[in-house]
Image (cartoon, rainbow, N blue to C red; front, side, top):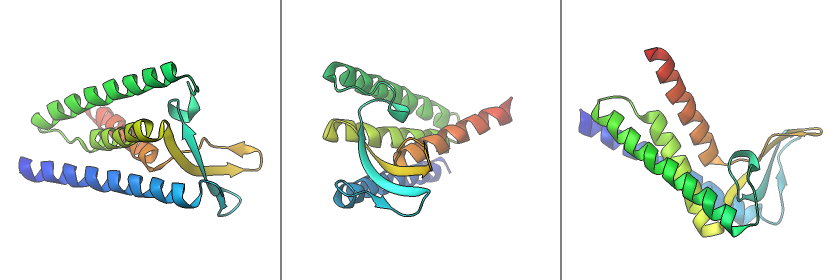
Length: 154
């Protein structure tokens, strides 16, 4: 049974990673120079985030960029270890897998594009939610699953 769940986790990871990578390639191909407005709430507009969530710590400084990349990589590595530990204890690690894959895909962006490719924008009138991508959605859902599972245990 454990082998089956390991394969299932691997499949989920591969699917999420592939969807994120393909959506970013699509965004770079079609919306890099010309944003696409779907309606007054949703548009697609490519940005490169060199910071962390919502553009915090965004800087053109290579030192800060490398520091952010290093910290993200360390946190992701720790989460891989934590997920493996939980897996060996026969716990569900769907949340951890989503966070790991989303983080890993964003790390790939940082290395390859020198910033995370974000392109989904929700806005209304003067209000605008920070631009995000599929990996960010996976991370948020993964954190939600982890928090939910922790709430069940306590």
